[in-house]
Length: 91
Image (cartoon, rainbow, N blue to C red; front, side, top):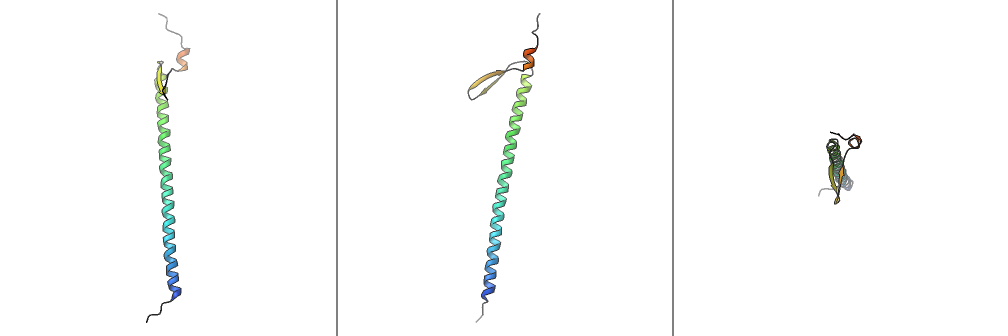
C-alpha cells in the first residue's frame, strides 16, 4: 500500500486554491480596468461631439446670418453679437 503524506496533500490543495484565487482576482481587475477604459472613451467621444457642435454653431453664426437651433422642442435663432453692433448698410 502507498502511504499518502497528508501534509503534502494539504500543501497541494492550498497551492491550487491560491492559484485559482489569484486568477479570479486578476480577472476581476482586468474587467474593471476594461470597463474604466471604455467609459473614458465614451466620455471623450461625447466631449468631442459637444465641441464639434459648438464650433459648428460659432462658424455659422459668425456669418452674420441667424442660425436656427432646436432643443427640447424649443426653437431659437442665434446671431453673433458683433453682427448686431455693425452699422446697417444704407444705400
